[in-house]
Image 1 (cartoon, rainbow, N blue to C red):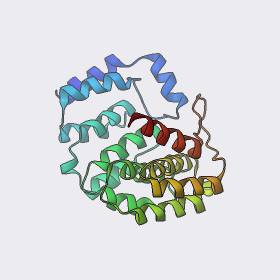
Image 2 (image 1 turned 120 degrees about the horizontal axis):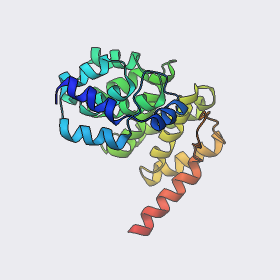
Image 3 (image 1 turned 45 degrees about the vertical axis):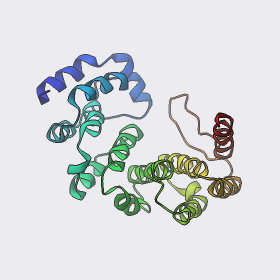
Length: 225
């Protein structure tokens, strides 16, 4: 699909109801209100198109940027591009999509470690989403790597910016369900941390209790064996 065809398809797929929903989730950029189901259909048609992804990102339109993160080629990502896109983040929805793309690139761990102490809310959120994805999907990193992450979460979670707290809590859960040793250490950290307060805006979203979530997930896994 050409850039023009994709933009026309995005505009046609947008709805007022979805625009209201995205706005409640903190999206303030221009947006058409395209559902993730419709974005998924476009992704299937486009597959991977790095040049198109860069053109879509350059529009500044929220829906176009989500789609850009879906169709960009991980193999063609360089540090300049990732830093440029990271500087454009402005809400948690696009940050999650961006981090999911970064995870597929060869620079994922490098960028995660570069952003781990960032004061920027969105870089921080993206970093801890990457930590969670590494915990769940990368078996090569040693437990000690995630023990360091747990120590940082325990020490900093209550003082970090809103969406960083949310992503840290998710990373705590992901580390806790990685294996039995980290489960015990994550549960201990969760007990020391206590309640994590996140402002979810005008939505019905709630911050999960990390300890409860870890225990329920592990129990479900054991029941399926």
